[in-house]
Length: 596
Image (cartoon, rainbow, N blue to C red):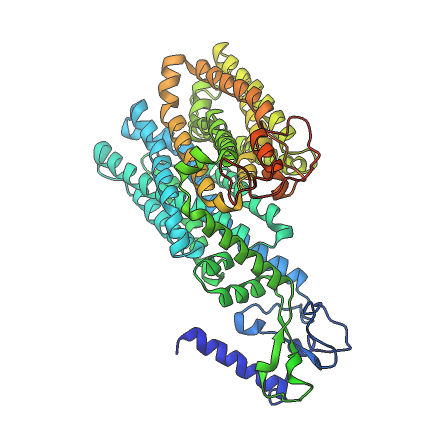
């Protein structure tokens, strides 16, 4: 007999004892037991159950068994304790975003000292910065297998362990300039593997555990944690910059192990993702996890077939009540079945034979490409170096690093503004407004370098990060999570994530080279041109998805030919060349919201 069967048998024995009266009912369980005529928190939706045969309603509460007893919540009300537990769960999972953000921010400050200590060329500096991004790109692509095989939780724990090892290796990059550089690159590559795994698993774990009403706000924690990690890295680098340059950068890089260890320890008490449990066929465990997270106990009624007999010893005569957890579990199972339907379709086939899906993939990948070609990671990875190039602080490396703290905070403020606008004003206006100010700020940064006005360059960097945070930072995450059909969402999101990482790598590994060829101002003029052209294209390409259901969003990407085919009665079972699996409904759309 396995352990899960033993646990289930113990529960059933406890249930029999409660029903028969042999086991005293504690205050928590007693407060949640009602008679048929009493007031109930759960509505019985089983229409086959008659009131004459359903003698009683019994709610079994095993919070103490699963370690979710909450002092001060003795009446069993789930709302406050439930929200608190979900927030703690999301906070721990969001530490994976903090790891990504910390690595992004720490290299900006550390590279100033590493460059002089190891006497690195521009190309060697670019390799130090971009090596992590490159390995993260490959691990993110391969991470899908780990996510499905060992689960989201174990993938995040593994990512934390790898990050700790990589951080320690970078801090111990001894052996002179040549050997130390090689060890540094190896450490950067190892950390990149961890970041790739964590960037996939973190948001996915949060979205799968969060209740629908909190899913949007909690998923944004990951993006905020990324920027929060950048702020933390800037602060740590600023504090350590006063130490001798022979080892201050080692401490900067090694400190990344601290949040990684915190995440690793935190996940000990967290459950598996219920979606993953359904994926591997452990549906009963998935229901248990959902009830733990939602703090909704299981409610039983007498089976209508017992004809009023009072055989209270037999718990098999009980029928579980349909409640919110039951509905949520059924939705997860339904989505899993749809996902299995799309597994037989390759990515190449989606591009060739599925025009509706192809339109969504063009948009999703374009958003990620533009967000990176706008030059955000030149500011993040080389921020202190860019300030150093302006000469604003006349070679004071500590001040060059400290200025990156308020720079990172500006992006965090921009993200906050975005989430106050994104649902009220809509995705499309928020994105276009953000890109407008990004274009202006990039022109000002370039002009500051061209005119040798250091204060203009730095102030424009503040405007740039705020503008980026208020739209282009978040919109790729948001729209990529809602525009793809459920059947092919996994494949499409994995592709878009890969595009993000490789574009990130391309920008990171070419910035210093472009700056030497085009000049410090010229490279930002180049980024401004890309943003301007992209903004014009997005004006016609990006639909408004705010306020629409996922079904209605799919209809935005149906072309005129597919609509004609559907109106003629040709309705295929997939999203292939002949149409869409969903029927067309009349949806009133805002201007420019229909993709043709």
